[in-house]
Image 1 (cartoon, helix red, strand yellow):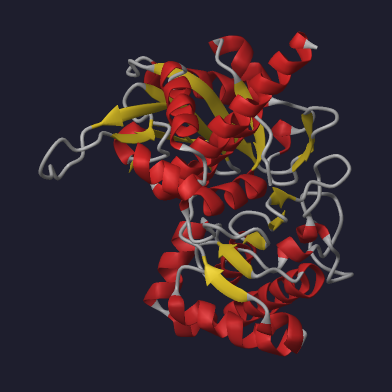
Image 2 (cartoon, rainbow, N blue to C red):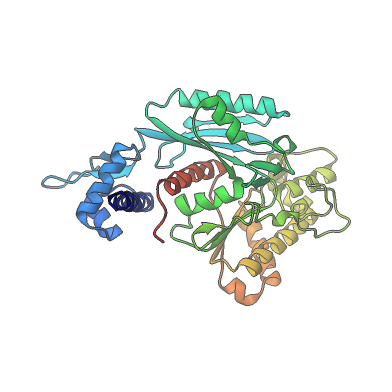
Length: 388
């Protein structure tokens, strides 16, 4: 009986500590009095939880910036100087590695960018080199590395079963391979799921339990937060709306089929259409610059991708009925004028009642922030179950 009581006491302590982590992540640096008020826990319970998190290096105490009369209480914040995590973003054209404190703040000074190599071995060597470079400058404890990847991540098999836009990742697990090389715990994250976590932890989805994230930058991926949890499906591969066939005679997709939605509704789709028109291959960044210089020359291409992106957005809203839909992209999403045209077409494609329930937002999230959020979410979940 004593053994059972000890287990229950330890679990309860962990749950309280998780609650503290969640409150600090949501509200930023806070005094113990504020944590007591916001969490609804008693002052002794909060003090015990904070002391435990301090010992384990998850949080740290700092003096308030503005000193008040008397003896001001110190603020508890996520460990920004005494601990760190790394985020790795693998994408079709470029990759990056970023180091951040547990507060999740990213900077260019702590980011390393490089072009994606043609072979998996060369890619892994570059990731290891840049990770070691950043790890060498960290004085505190490194709690883990989040590795964000495109494609279908099968959680049961523990690998990327298919990556239509970067086939060197097929049947691979770069997180597992990096962990073996670096000796630091690494977590494999599907990039759109990670974007969901990043938006909820650091973006405009604060406090939302039911929203969706549509990434239309390279491929077309969907992440759905339902009841506060990322919708995974049987094997973790839910959300691949980009591989729904919308043009029976369309171009060949990286998945092997023809006419997939992502071949018509993404930044890379627009880049392909503009490249075909100009007779030379252009990157997404180059196409964005061309369109900005002479938008009148590419109205047909813009109209095609706008129509299909509206179809994708409408499908997500009609099927999942989210409170908000965040859209992540470059050419059509980052331009207020172009995105407004997309939203006009969405009105024609979506069920009126479902659209009235949903706010559509061009997200400011980044994939490097998402990779950090993914490893932070994993740390919080691994510490204790949520009481909600």
